[in-house]
Length: 339
Ligand SMILES: [Zn+2]
Image 1 (cartoon, rainbow, N blue to C red):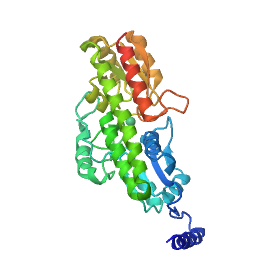
Image 2 (image 1 turned 45 degrees about the vertical axis):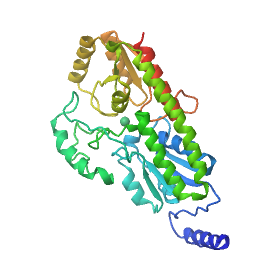
Image 3 (image 1 turned 90 degrees about the vertical axis):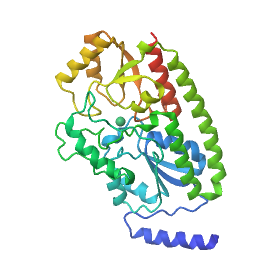
Image 4 (image 1 turned 180 degrees about the vertical axis):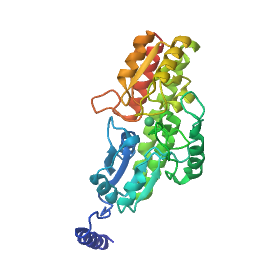
């Protein structure tokens, strides 16, 4: 068995010399090569895989996975991977082309498989009606995570945040993150069955920590007065957090990390902050801080702190792991709202 495997590896290595992007030459003794599309998934894979995995994260800390432009090294990493973990729900609009450009033949893990996605309404404060036709296309394509929902007419609607019919930010609910972890664990165990018990053991420890944090967040939010649960963020990525933990998030403009709001959007928000007595405005890593400052100046609301939504902080930041991110966000929110 071992000698046959070695022969296979040698053959692969030889063929690899003549190919631009050799497929994986992984041998079961080595750590499993895994590609995760963005930092939150990369962290989860490391927690479950430990030193049994070698993780490449495509969109790193503080990166914006909505608008990422893959580089050639990414195609090489994908080619050599045994497992590719991505969020799905049209979050990584650039991924299909990257996979096509590689010769990946491993296991694809859609982390959101099995969660109950939140549907974009299309008729709330910051979307207008021509979203609706896109929603149809996206719904049909949802199961195979095709990206057909991208706007054909994306002028002012060039909205990176709004590719599909469903809100992709499902990890903001810890119960969903447990499903992510289960999907990743199963894929690692299937790829590397000799170490399945390690993966399942790591999963059990991790999930216990997740559930404890989930309970803590619920308890702290429940202690807030009912009329102090509305917050403002520029990056509307907290739909799942809102639904699960009971805070209300008001966005100053549409679900976007890149399109500029109109003067009318800003004026409407300022009116809304005044009318609803909102006291805290939150700045996120991916958003326009000058806009938030303008709103804060005009309303007297305070800037509550930094929330991390789509990417972890660097290793020295307050949100360098998924659990630290959720802990940091919930504490920052509750502290600002209870002032
Ligand atoms: Zn986002």
